Length: 139
Image (cartoon, rainbow, N blue to C red; front, side, top):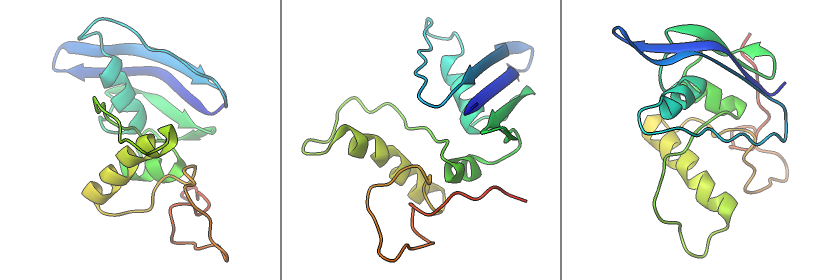
C-alpha cells in the first residue's frame, strides 16, 4: 500500500467538508476524484498532504501513520501537492512543469529538501543534502 486514508473527516465548525472519506492507493494506481464545486475534493486532498489538519481519521504512507506530520515532512517522504496553474512553462517537460510546484512551495516554506521521489538530476558522488537524497522515516 502506497497511500491510505482511513475515515478522514474535516469539519469547519458544525459543517463537515469531508465526512469519513477512505481510499487506498497502490504504487502505479491512478485515481480520479470528481465532484461539484464545494464537494470537499480539495479539502480531502489537503488533509492527505497535511495542508489541513483533519478533524479525525488517519493518513498512512507506505504503511506509516503520517497523520500528525507537517506538510514539509510529508514532502520529504515523497507526498506533496502542487496548485493549479492555468498555463504551462514552454520548453519544459510535463515532469519539469509539475516539479515547479514543489520547488516553489519548498522555497516559500523554508527551503527544506524536496520530495525524494523527484529526481531531476544525478550526483556523482551522491549529495545527501540534495532533493534526490534517500527518504528517511522519523524515529
